[in-house]
Image (tube, rainbow, N blue to C red):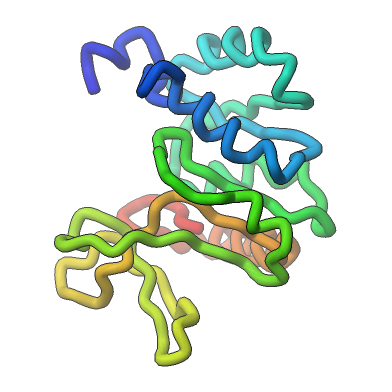
Length: 182
């Protein structure tokens, strides 16, 4: 993405007349989040300035991930600012998608969005059982296990279970390709 990201984090790149993050946050509005937490790293100060100009987004917070060690670590940095009784919507900041996120308000279970791809070796994929429920996630499989690529949107209804799972991974230093995965 260089040279475009020399001065901007990827989420602030313009696409179709708006920044990526504007598209993402706009899609979450039907859920009426009580707070939107942004995990920042590269060019964090640019993101802080951008968010200061977005009062219409309601309560926002940035949390710095100074030593990125994967998605699991990023999520764990946000968890102190969440409760177990409000669902959590996790969206990767460089993800563009077409989904009606408002439908998640009626969900009683966790939801992971996927997209069928021809070459799943470049993506994390969801492996489903006969009932269509996800049984496991595999990061960039070199042997075919599924063609359902994870698109970077996760709706977590059971925040307590997520919190406990991440703590277990961190306590036992369980990593995939050196990263703490969620």
